[in-house]
Length: 337
Image 1: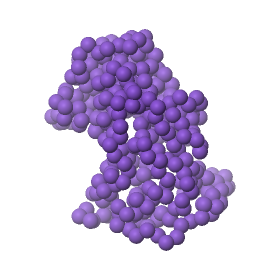
Image 2: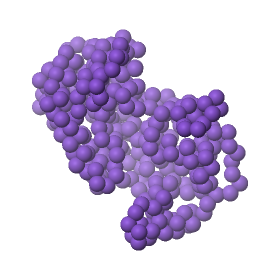
Image 3: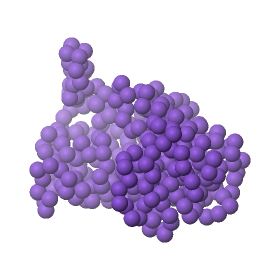
Image 4: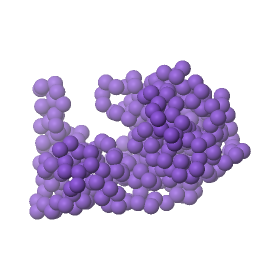
């Protein structure tokens, strides 16, 4: 059913409103002069701009009333870690938490539901660039829980007439980002990251500002209803390009040498053996080698038709602010550097 919202976006609920993406969605909505409520697991503080609602996706009863008076819901919360041993939390938080959130949305006649999913809801691409028409499923709990949650959201939209839209961001960058990009920046700054070779790999990324813009368009545009869209900045980055760009942004010269690809793969296998023999994680193994040398390329075939969206930023544009944010928060750093 292609439901058309009866009223413009006015009263919004943002889950994950204190997180990297959710906080920026909330700020953008406030800048539009809209009413914003944020779902938080912590005891609400004295934020005068956002109406904070205490609730936990793993505790369904705590969500009762979260969507009261809301016409548009941006769902950016979820369990983001993919470490082994945390599988149950993916299903409890992402799938079952969203199920309860959708029930609250239907009960309160929410008209729009935008789910910020993940590119990990797709199969691993290998050396082939994937799009939304690619068939195949992820293999880990993180990706599977995201995929099943997407299906749940789409089914809810078909059954209820609610406007639903799903966004799959690729690796998101910007000031304050976490994960591999933040670690890489820190290790390069400290001189611990060896010069990477050019393996010819292709990896997709997207600026957090473009994720926010896409989320707002997904709520505003009827053409986004029932659609799944990959988000990237339309560039294919090699890890070598990312590495050199970070060095430049940190004020470091380009190294005159790089590790050979074959040596990196051999060291990864040595790390695998270390883990088997000692039963503990190695600082470097074949999985990490694959992330550094392998491809993760995704292109969207839906984004222009569904959202009329074109990315406004590239990775190098964001790096100065990323370095500033890193230097302002890194322990022991000179904050005026």
